[in-house]
Image 1 (tube, rainbow, N blue to C red):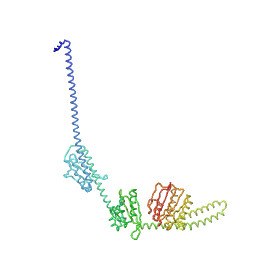
Image 2: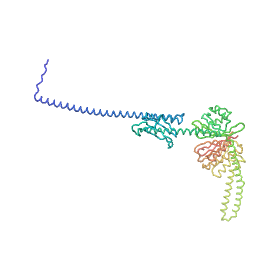
Image 3: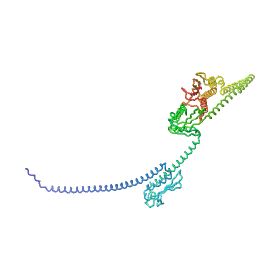
Image 4: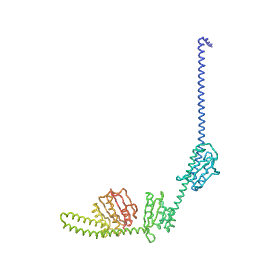
Length: 527
């Protein structure tokens, strides 16, 4: 075993150095403690700052929670008033009476709060209402005019806030309550106006003589107002809720008529435009004419009005026939009187021209030429008003003369073509077809600036067609005109064409020609 080495005895210099190190060590330790103490003090200051922030945050949170509770009370108040306003079974008086009861719980000091609502001279109060120490009120306005007020009172003194002891949000709340009551009054007035309008509408419906009915898209009869057609009311009552196409027999109305009606129902719902349907129906031993006007009622339901127009159609037909007779009379007068008179004047002018000095011969010849032109124009007018060929040789010859006259007068190529057998038409039908072609040619020349016009008569039993086609500027979109009486707001010429086709039981189609121009087609029965 090796013995431990002994430490050498310190020298005086070493002892001095060691003492200096010990003093430095004590100084370093003191400095470290001072630094640590300063750090602890800073940490304590930071903790105190955090504690103060935490206290403020806790106070802010508590204040926010209190404000949130107040806002919830206010929202509950407005919600309950709104819910009362949605009650259609409650009259306005009961709604206001219940509304005043929900006001006190919404205010900050609800235990000392009472309220009242004054509306149009009537007063609604909470139990034990008192004027109170503090008062907050807001007028109820209708169209800018005061009709009442909402009032909230405190029975005891409370610390001041935004408006006395009342909060700023409570001012907003009482304003909102006044607006809500105002809206309730407006709704009540609107409901009263609606009820009054409904009463007037019922009285109006009772006064309308037309039969009014509702049909859905499938053809189901939803309801009706008989008007003056009380004799069919029991039959219609038995059909309500039934489909008029599939569940009603032909003894009531022919199926083709019912199917045609359904086509118009679909057209109304698709286009949104009103439609007019006219139908001739046998009623017992009589034949009656009816007009049905259809308009959109809802997305899938139409409203129809049925009217007996038999007498109206008879009068319209008679007026049209009187107009035709007057045209023919004027045409005969022009041809037999004025033309003959002008011809005599022309002979005299020619004789005078032969005896006129040479220096006046040119003027005399011009007068003779003008008289000849006047005779030609007058004969043209006479033929237009009274087509003599139509009476003598029929519609084919009349249309041929119309084409020749139009080409000669207006300088537009015009030809007339006849296909099928010679038509054996009653005179009135032939005249209506001639007038229709005359109007179509006139419209083409006036509005279309064509270079050529074609008139084609096709007679293929059991139906015939008359086509007038030009190569002018044409129209932008095709259209179909179902024959019927003239309508207001349309060109008179087109309306008369439409009615002439209606008189002979036909229809008019007006659309673009190919490649351009206008094509007018009249389909008519031969029987």
